[in-house]
Image (cartoon, rainbow, N blue to C red; front, side):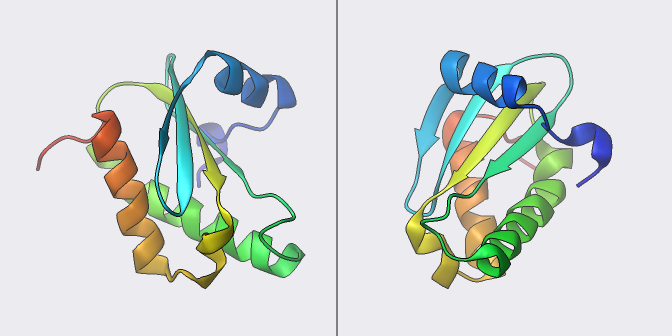
Length: 111
């Protein structure tokens, strides 16, 4: 994930949580709010696993989001919240689940 495309500050996450719209799936929840530019934050709690597993899940989500960025409609800030079932999911399963959530929210262009 490019540095300029990341949500980093707690206040940014809090703004998206409080003012955003949520779309939920089996593996993750996507929360988004309209802004200028596209920024993404990933939240993986300790319920998912130890630090190695959490970081692996974050890397997989970030990479899949980067692959979907050229197809995004509009400019939003996104927070992806992982659910406990995601640690057994593979890279492509996470990608398809993320694509389905973005499509459900109406943020993907039909290419």
